[in-house]
Image (cartoon, rainbow, N blue to C red; front, side, top):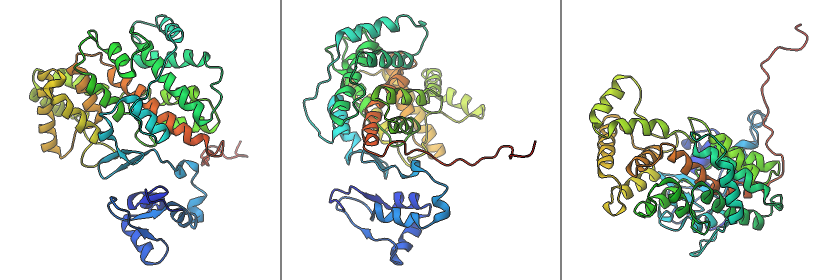
Length: 402
């Protein structure tokens, strides 16, 4: 059934990607009667029924034997289209001014409520804090997050209930627990307040709270990234939420995903006093300037645009010297290489502008992404179990050659 709100419909770009053809070919299919194009109010271009596209894709039997369920994941959570990021059809930038808990609940359930509160058990929070004190003082925040997730799970005997009501309740408590465990504040604080207390030595100054809240909302999900796919694979085995989140945490623990802001932070640290000099040194080395461009966005990263806009507002108390240096780099790099700053650049700028620890971007990314991972786990629990069995192509020694 076609829904008026666009559910079960694909944009031209999505249909082309699914069929493995160019957008022009999609319209050729329409003219040949193989596909039916539809127009929806407020949506640019044509849209296509997902079942009709799947049927057409299935006609190519050779292609069908080489693909697995990974290429057929249907989701109603996140859409990235025409330079915009949407959660369940709502612009994520517009949502970023709302309370983090409210947006999380919306991503999980589709209900956008004004008053949503997540509650952490103070005893469990204390146990998590005690456990993280045993690790090396030089360990990263993501290590502490992993420990907190594992400790918290042992106190939830009903975590194996994968029903949507139970999972939503567990996810809210997990977020509140992990956020509180990272800092030393009260377990009654909101998630954003707990995170601020964990990353800011003088957390009594609330100037950066609005920027932090926006960052957490904007990092909550980004479609089927590697970590999200890992979560869905775990959920397809009916692993409980805590185990699925652990799978996601394992996937982002690398320089190409969760730690992608590290080189940006190091570069900006050198560029604060002399941005032009640092940029010249970077270019002379033959290395690209980190924090620019994106594999999905072509003209702009809406997450970076919004965070940088907030950081430029004097009311939020960001270090003006850091912001000026960042803007100089953006102007020079964008004009010379026709590119744009991405979310890694924005998170690194946020970190330096408030004098935070270097691993703050990774920490914020991991904590925020628990929201998206939960939403994808919820979707996967409604699918047939164990559906991810992608055919491999054996290239090793053939039998009988010894």
